[in-house]
Length: 95
Image (cartoon, rainbow, N blue to C red; front, side, top):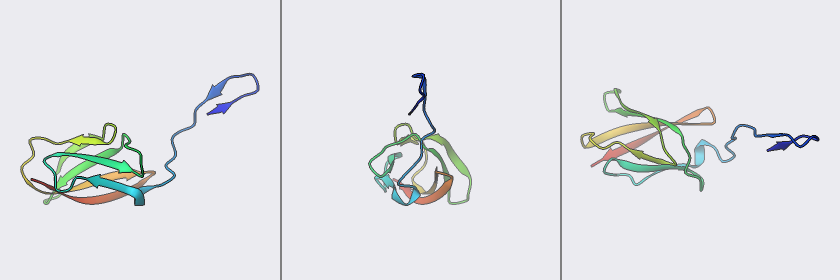
C-alpha cells in the first residue's frame, strides 16, 4: 500500500517473495480434489492439467489454493502452475 502526502493511497500488484520453489501440491495421490500452496499461502493461481498424451483436460485458477477436477478418470496427470512468471510441472495421480 502506498500512501501519498494528500492521503490518497493505492495498492501495488502482489509480488511472490517465496517463488515457485516453495510451491506444494497435496494430497498426491488424490481423488480429483487437491490444494496448491506457496509457502504458507493458499493463493488463486492459474493452472492447467494435462493427461499423459499432453491433452489439456482442465484449465482454470486454484480458488484459495483448492482445485476440483471431479469427473476425470483415474490416472497420471501433469499440473502446470505459474508463479511470478515461472511455470512448475507437477506429476499428479488421480485415483
